[in-house]
Image (cartoon, rainbow, N blue to C red; front, side, top):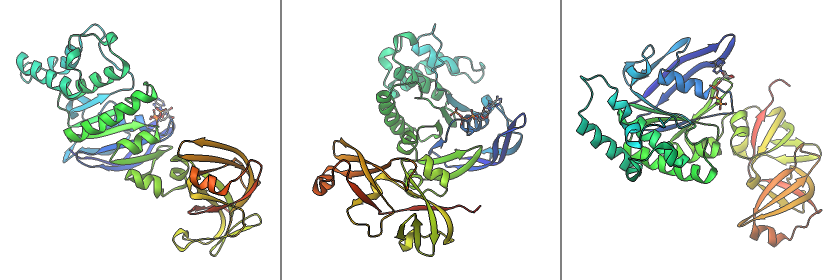
Amino acid sequence: MSVTIQNLNKHFGDFAALKNINLELNVGELTALLGPSGCGKTSLLRIIAGLDFADSGKIWFAKREVTELSAAQRKVGFVFQHYALFRQMTIFDNVAFGLQVQPRRVRPSKAEIADRVFKLLQLVKLEHLAQSYPDQLSGGQRQRVALARALAVKPEVLLLDEPFGALDAQVRKTLRRWLRTLQHELNITTVFVTHDQEEALEVSDRVVVMNQGRVEQVDLPRNIYYAPQTEFVTEFVGDNNVFHGHLQQDQLIIGEFVHQIKANGKPNHNHGSTTAYVRPYELTLSRHSNNALAKGEISHIYNIGFLTRVEIHSSQSQQPIEVLLTQAQFQQQQYQLGETVFLIPDNLNLFQNMNL
Ligand SMILES: Nc1ncnc2c1ncn2[C@@H]1O[C@H](COP(=O)(O)OP(=O)(O)OP(=O)(O)O)[C@@H](O)[C@H]1O
């Protein structure tokens, strides 16, 4: 079931929480809504679910307009960050709940319910805990039960609001891989809210990056990382070093440094005040100033297995500059703490400041 969102707006009092959202979520895809706290992810998810309603705009599930329909009428499955399981019910009864409360005329028979619940518990690999109670389960297991419960009513769209947000890092990692496999097996259109970029990039088929109630970019995870279209996406996703300078034709001028820009890195306008973003692994250290962006003093060296992280203090950057090299690269050059080095970029993401 595809989901289409058209010209959606939502206010809370005077505050515009969602501003003209247009989205097309593809059938069977796992879409992540990613953005900082307060950008409107949960508001959008709740409106897709029918738990809240927009001021204007329309929503379709395939060809069925659902804008005015309640959550129950839309047939969505929902999983929240905090496992909302019924503590006094067994795991089996928790999963069966949505089916047992259906009106008699549509409710499956007792045997059918039992069969479906066991299949779902097998799917989330918890069939051995059917007769346990939520308090006897770990956080990760409870979230898997919550997912089985959401799936029990055969939803057309599955909506997950930071489902692993309350779990520790290791469990999160295991569960997000597991969710990805499961989601592909079931092929159910899924929307997943997260403020964790690694989670969004690893789990989803497509990522919607949001900022202050607007959609900034909708793209494949690799494009969000390697080809960010806006300054916000560049800054929000992945680590960056930031340099402020001036563009003049093909040259980026930062203080005393003049860097020749490669043909593929040129922005549309080639004049004026510019911010350059460079990933830590896209910077190389050199003892020569040729085509450098900046220079500075090595202030910290940190080995992290295969990689070496080098921090550099420079008057060209407000923050310490971070460079990631392989151990081999680093050792070959024998850089020392306190040494002055030049920074050469392999790639630049340039955004021009239109106000200046
Ligand atoms: N019921 C409400 N009444 C008033 N303001 C609200 C309400 N719900 C959300 N907001 C505001 O709308 C904005 C978006 O909230 P929302 O919960 O959608 O953000 P979010 O991106 O999901 O953030 P988080 O990651 O912190 O959950 C926030 O500024 C929030 O304070």
